[in-house]
Length: 417
Image (cartoon, rainbow, N blue to C red; front, side, top):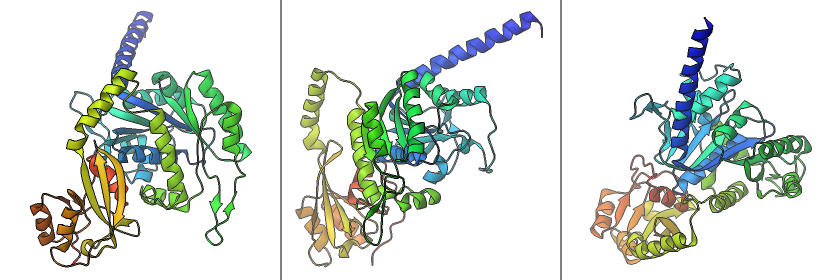
C-alpha cells in the first residue's frame, strides 16, 4: 500500500471513529446514571453484585441496562438465566439488547457467541476497546435511569475504556475482608482517582458466614477490612454483605429470587445498599430547589388519582398458592407509583363470595394472585377490583413493585380448587 493510500485509509478510519464518538455521546445523553462495578481481583462476587443491583433497581420500577464488559469471562447471562440474543433495531445497522424484564435490557459477549457458550475470546486490547464502544454506539438502548456495567477484575483495558468512553460513570468497588483482596482493591481506588472517576462507594462481600446450627457468625475472610479501608481512603462504605450459600445456588441455576427472601441477612443488607444508591444517584437527575418543589407539588396533586390498594394473599411471607385459604392478605397502599404502606390482615373464614366482599370492604382495588377460580375473578371484577392471576412466587412487596413498573410477568392460572 502506497503512502497516499495509507493516508486515505487512516482518514476514513478517523472519520468513522468520530462518527462513533457522536453516536456514543448521543446515546449516553439518554442514560441518567452509570455505575461501573469493579474489583481489584477476581472471585470477590463482583458479577453477583452487578446482577443483583440491576435486578433490584428494575424491580423498584426504574429502567435499567446491564452491560457485561467482562469479555474473557462473561457470567451475567448465566446468572440471570438469560435466553435469546440481540434483536433488530428500528434504525439501520442498529440492534436491540436482550430483554430480561420489560424495563431491563442486557448485553454480554456471551449473547453473541451462539450455541457454544464455552468458546474462548482470545482478543487483544484494540479489539476489546472496539467491542465495548459498540455495546453503546450500535445498540438501541431504551432511555435508562441506570446503566450497570460489570467489568472484569483489575485495572486493564475494559475499565479504562469505560472511564474514557463514559466519563460521568461512578465506580462501585467490591472487595472481601482479607488483606490479599484489599491490597488489590486499593489499586482500583488509585486507578479511579488517576482517571478522575468518582467512586460511589465500597462494598464488602463475603463478610461472614452465619452458622446454621448455632447462629454464630464465622469470619472466614477476616473482619471489617472493607469498612476500615473505606474509612482510611475517605470513601463511603455502602454495605457489608454476608456469605449466603443461596447466592451461589441461584447463580448456578440462573435465578434471581434471593431478593424475594427478606428474612435473609444478605437480602436485608443488599436492599439497604440499593436504597442508598438510589438516594445518592436519583433517577430524576439533578434538579434545583424550585424544580424539586414543583415536582413534589405535582406528585401531591396527582396522588389521589394514582392511589391504589393492592391485596396479595400470603403465607409465611410469600404469595400463597391458595387464594381462598391463605393465612393472611398483604394490603399494599401505593401512591404515585410507589409503595407507601403495607400491613397484613387476616381474612374471614372461606365461604363462596365472602373473600371478594371482604377485600372490597377493606378498600382493595387490585388483587394479585397465583391462581383464582373464574367465579371468584368475576365476583372481584363486579366490585371494580382489577384481577391479576398467574403471578410468580415472591413477597408482596416485590410483586407490587413489579406490577407498578409494568414488569410483572405472569404464567398459567393454577386455580386452588
